Length: 398
Image 1 (cartoon, rainbow, N blue to C red):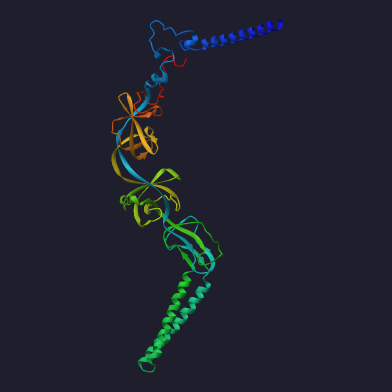
Image 2: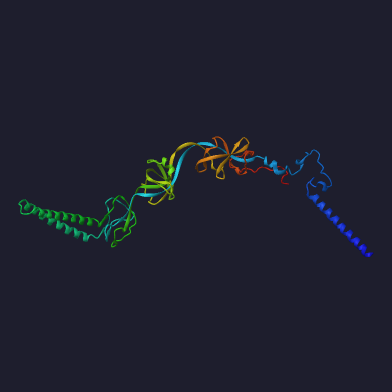
């Protein structure tokens, strides 16, 4: 009997615990759930407050899906598309070359006896730069001249003897041939003597000296360089599609990183007769005056060529919204934003040309495009102000 009572008491205790646990769970849910959310668990339907609108919108959380939020206008900064006169420019990369440029070398193997130039100085055409040992050349010239004098004297006497028929015609012809050979030897000896003096072939500036007095130079040994840089030849390449726009006399402007604030103006001088079949480009040569000598052969320059001017619609570059290789802008129509595809043309710093899709005077969004979609309501704010995020309805964040 005692065991039966114990079982009954244990069952009652377990039932009481279960009932208490269920009551605690209901109480906690009622505390944390908004009014009307419990439904049947709260013991009946929620009571509507006097004067409150009926239906799902009466709750404090607002309409489902945030539809009230999406109807709030987005603050944006706008700018007018304007008509401007744009000059079309073609940009290319070029290399500066001297108008005339050589490496000064010797024609014969010989020892350097004197150096007559200073590194970096400007020399005139014909000025002596280097003298080589000339003793052997002078001796050879003296021998050749002596042989010439003797052969000329014999030829003159032979002509008198030929007139009296003492000397045959064949003998006279032989003496004449000897005379001409000796004359040629003299010319050759004088040329070899002249090769011992190296002169500047044109006006220009000499470079660094590569030899010293007593050095043995051979044909091809570089003694120094000579460049005429009063005018620079600027060679650059342009795609073949621009061939119709390039012609001799066309003005160009070049800039170098060495002188970022200086523009070097010149004109197209000639166009190569062939198009490179690999790059499909053609080499163009322009002449750029260089009176101050700032440009050096081998310098890298950026070339700009004006191709004419035209009237075009221009908008700020940051109004563009690129998507998958296409360009869009948001045009403000009344109080809504219309997403419109445009085709762009020439770019310049801060602006871009609109070829089609937009007319001058239309207003485009320049700040706030990341929050917009086609047809979204907008309101304009002053330029420079931070575009505001759409305001949430009251109570949505509680």
